[in-house]
Image (cartoon, rainbow over all chains, first blue to last red; front, side):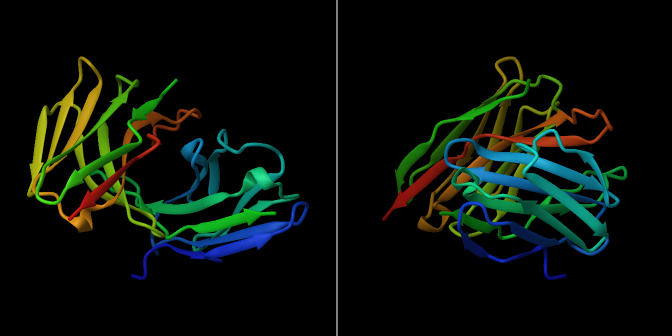
Length: 116
Length: 116
C-alpha cells in the first residue's frame, strides 16, 4: 500500500480564500484523523471519523473549519475563510479498528498551509 | 483534562546516549507512545509501552514508565546523526464522545540534534 496520501503537500493562499485539504487513507482502515501541528500548540487532533461518520469534532477550532468523508477512501478538510493564524502543517492519519490487538495510526506526510 | 509535557530541545554527540523525558496527566491511559518525525515527514511510531509495564527494550531504544509520577522516558543508545528528529510522547485519552475509542494526545515534541 502507498500509505496515507495527502494533497497538496504545500499550499499558499491569501487571507479570506477557501482552502481544501485532501486525504486518502490506507485502504481498509476504519478510522481517519485530521491533526494540526503548530509551533505554539504542538500536534492537536481536530476531528476523527469512524467508518466515514464524524465521531469527535471537539478539536475543530471554529466554524470556519469543516471536514467531510464522503466515502471510505477520501476525506477533505476545508477552511473558509482562511486566516493567517490557520498557517500550520495539517496531518491526516488512519488506522484499523482494534480487534483484540492494538493497531497503530499511520500518518500522511502532511500539508503545509501558509495563509498570507 | 489530559496534558502531555516535554522539554523542547536536546543536543547530544554521536555515540552518546540520549534521554528524552515526558510527563502526562491521564492516569487511565492504557498505552503510551513514542513517535518520531523527520523533517518534512509525518509521524512514525517508534515504540509503545503498556501501562502495566515498567520498562520495554527494543534494540537501541529503552522506554521507562513510572506510573506513580506519570513520567515516561525514551533512551536511545549509541545515538547516530540519523536519529536527529523531533520525538513526540503521546498518551491515550478517552474520546470526549466516550465512544470507547482511545484518542491520542501528543506532547509538543522534543527536537533531538545529534552532532558528529
